[in-house]
Structure formats: structure tokens, C-alpha cells
Image (cartoon, rainbow over all chains, first blue to last red; front, side, top):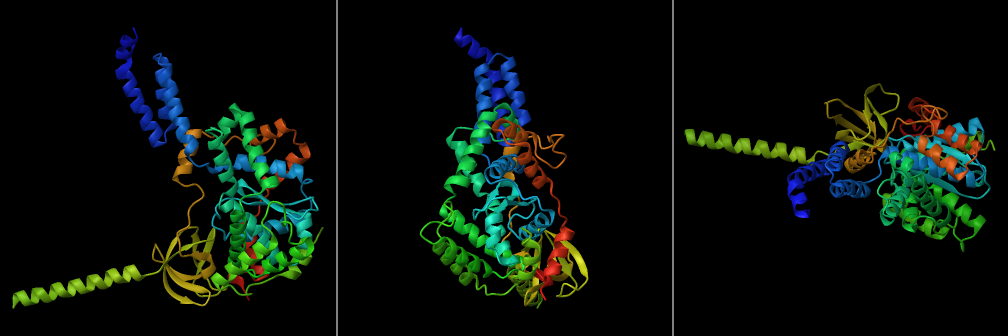
Length: 295
Length: 170
């Protein structure tokens, strides 16, 4: 009986498998879906599962697209806002931080997505980025800043995390390790608990453990580069890091999530030297005092 | 005699061909690094804009003068661009082919935005997540406002101008 069934359906199975492979390799979900439904209708559940599994396996290995990144970024941002006292509601300050951030983002390596900036109601000294261009700076860090060039470099650091998709890499890795194949909207609707698991992993890494130190150093380098491209003094960031080292000390990390100040200062100095960047560009201390100090 | 003439013609053709090839090979190409950039008739921000360029456009460098490059676009327009708006390596886009392929598989629905969030606010998935983990209305609205916050490229341009940034450096 088993043999008969196999012989009866073998040609159909072969055709459906070929159709599914075409769909999977060609990136056409509809073809894959038709093949899967056809297999199920013909009574071959096993083949349907194989076709579904093939698509799932391939999709799990593929990078996260921007629309999914947006959902992930917004969900992570909700947690950042919840844990860091909410967002300052001062229209002039919001506008100023967004203008500086946008000026820097326009020169970054990923300028074609929207970036959103906000000041968190929190006195700790910190800044965060979530996927899809969400950037936060705490009130505590803003108070330490003396000019617009320093602010531009801090926002540039966070923009660097977004442009290099550092948090997305964490999510992608946890997706693969956890055997989760999809992180998209359709998946989240079907399985909100697993989506929550992905967000929890990303938030833990972002807010509690921190990214790899090499990613933070890379973000420092990019922050200085983006700010310099926009026309700010590329050496200004050193001033801020030195000031924070004086305030916070160097034994502990700036934030528990970052390398210590001396490591970061040395890396920024190396970057400046390697590119031959001098103290050119503007600081805009007056504009920062006028617009960024409305706290 | 005819053979000599043909040989001379052949040698000239080869030399011209090699010269053209070397010229092409040695021409420096840069790419627009910013989201947008202006190609100007001269090397100051006060000069007339002759073309609006976009991220990733390739430009042939004709001359370098301080912080400005004289370039030719792929469509043959000549002009000057602020050097910091260019990069020597071709920038990659937001979603590469693989990411687009992934999106197709995952069958995402980009147009699904909640009525409460408006056309630019949180999507249904984020709203669903917020409900699930007990995010307050106030916190939700904060991220919603942040997502929907708009600043035009022109406003950023005016801001750069006001601060003497980039090509508006004094």
C-alpha cells in the first residue's frame, strides 16, 4: 500500500517539489504557498511540511528587511522609554535635537531611512539607539554637553549603531540560535510570545549587557566621522569623553554597557590621527546654549 | 606602400585605444554620500544649483580644489560638489537584495498601521507588544509622537546654513 501511494503521487510530488524549490530560490512566497497548498490538497501532508519547512529555513537565514526593522525598533523603543522615565515634552528642545541629529544622519552611511530623536527624562549619563533609526539621549548626558559639535558626535555614535545594524545583528543571531525563523509582522501576529522573546533579548543586550566593545569603538569612530562630514569639529568628542572621565572616573565603564573612557579616548585619537582630522569645523557652543540647554 | 599605411593606421588606432582605456581607468569616481546633495555652478554654497543629486549617484572627478570637487554626473552635467558629501566607495542601500528576499518570504504587511497611531505612528505589532507587556498610554504616545515627528530636508538645510555647517562653512 505504501508503495502504491508513493508510485501514485511520485510524479505530482516531484512537480510540486520542483515548483516549491523554484519559489524558495526565486524568493516568491506565493509560488511556495501554492505548492504547499497543492501538496496538502493531494493528501501529502509530509510534502506540504517539507515545502513549508524549506521556506521557513530560507527565510530564517535571510536578513531582516526595513519594515520588520521598524516594528522591532518601535517595540524596543517602548521599553527604553518605559525604563528611562519617559520622553521630555519640550517642543523647542525636541526640534533642536532632531535638527542636529538629522544634520548628522544625512551624512551617515545609511541616510535613506528616517531617524527619530528624543531626550529621556533620566539623570543617568547615557544614550541609546534602537533599530530603524530610533535615537535617545538622557537628560543627564545632555547636561554634560557644552557645544553642538559634542552633541552631534554623541548622536552620530548612536546613528552609527543604526547604520551598521548592530542591534539587528543581535536579533538575527538570537533568531537563528532560538530556531525562530521569522521576525516579521505576520509572524508577530501569529506568535506574539516569540516576538516578545526577541525584543527581550535585544533590550537585555542594549540596556543591561551592552554590545560587544568593538561595536562601541566602531560607533565612536563613525560618530566622529559623521559629525565631521556635517561640518562639526571632529576633535570635540574628545573634549566630552575627557570631561566624562573626570566626572565618572575611569575604573568603571562610562556606562556599564560601554568600554572605559581611556580605551575610547585612545581609539578616537587613533581615528583622528589616521584620517588626519584636525580641529577644523565648528563647535556652535552659543547655539547649543541657546537651544539645547532649555532643560 | 599600402601595407605600410595600413600598419601605421593600425598602430595609431591601438595607441588611441590604449590612451582611451587608460583615461577611463584612471578617472576617479566618487559617490554621493548624503541623502541628497547639490551640484553647483561654482565652488561656493552661493553658486547656482545646476543639479540635485541623490544618495549613491556616481560622479567622475574632473578637478579637486580644497573642500570642493568639480565633477561630471552620469548624465553629463558638470558642476561642483562639497567634498564631504562624497565617498570613494560605493555606499550600500538600506535593504539589500537578501533583505528584500527575506521580506518577501516573511510576507510582511507594511501598510498595517493602527488607526490610533495615524499613518506614521506605531504599527499593529508594536501596539500589540505594548498591550502585552503593560506599556502605559503615556509611554506609547511618546514613542508614537517620536515616530511621527517630521522635519523636512529644507529645514535641515536652513539649520546647516544658519550654523555655517558643511558647504555653508564661513
